[in-house]
Length: 221
Image (cartoon, rainbow, N blue to C red):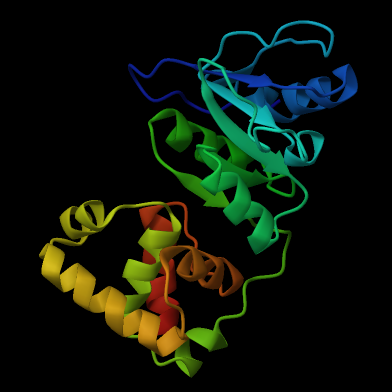
């Protein structure tokens, strides 16, 4: 079985799976076994308390309709939605309710591990990849977004504040606000939540700086 080298000094990320059958939990454990030096999936049963962990994966559909919303409450861990349903509406709802991230059950193991490590580091990650089909890219050109506007929208969709965006992009807070206003006008939205939905639909929701760099190259072709 292929093994992957651990980042020196990095503790293993402990991941629990909430309210899933033993079959599902064992399947996730087997899927991530080659990465056991980076991520461990804790054993759990539906009839037992969720074990203490760094991250807890949950299926939003299992909690839909609960009085307090979809995200399970009162857990000393970062809650991460893990679902086949990656529609913009579902993603936006879970993130608004307090999920630390939203990852797709379509993800291959390597990409899921990458997202889990970033989430454990405190990043907000939304990876709604749904298989081999890439997001439609022509819409970015259709709306005539500049590269800076595209970057700002992708960071908004990733849950970054205006101050975070200013620090990451090395620009002033007033410049961030200016790019937001111009981008909103071009894509015809008036709120941050609408911008998040637009970004998800048009493939601007990116998990890592490497992904963003790849998109920049594609945008200039």
